[in-house]
Length: 118
Image (cartoon, rainbow, N blue to C red):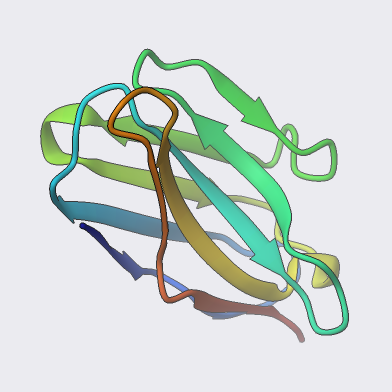
């Protein structure tokens, strides 16, 4: 089992900044990809950014250039720096950790609300 502890959500004005963190604990093995996903009301959950243990990164087109994902493998922690937030970024943000090599797994955090509003 892997537990994910998320923090850092909140209310921010358009153009503002937030930083989300996600710490994994439990039976965390190497070579796991960590990522952030979000789900707005009435919408499906979508990928925001992912980062492999080797540092390969993917971003959704909608956040490229505004969000930055990073991780510290020694701390089993990932962060999502969100700059120039827009109203359309409002959603519940979920941390995910997945491993595609044996032992395979995928776990989700409880979610943290990000609201961008004036």
